[in-house]
Image (cartoon, rainbow, N blue to C red):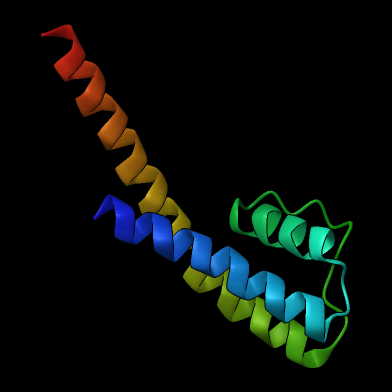
Length: 89
């Protein structure tokens, strides 16, 4: 499940970056930055969507993406705990 969650998280960031690059006319760096801070629920507010389609996409992006990122983080932590537990044996 870890690899699937990692692939989903990376795909979410890449897909979002492609959208924001083309629709919101952000640079690639700004697009990726916006995706990461949005899905990490940081949301500095320095970059915001300006088009209606960008705002609508962002609403669904947040609702689906936060769950995917949270699942990935949960599995990564569980995996790290298991590895550490097995190293102590």
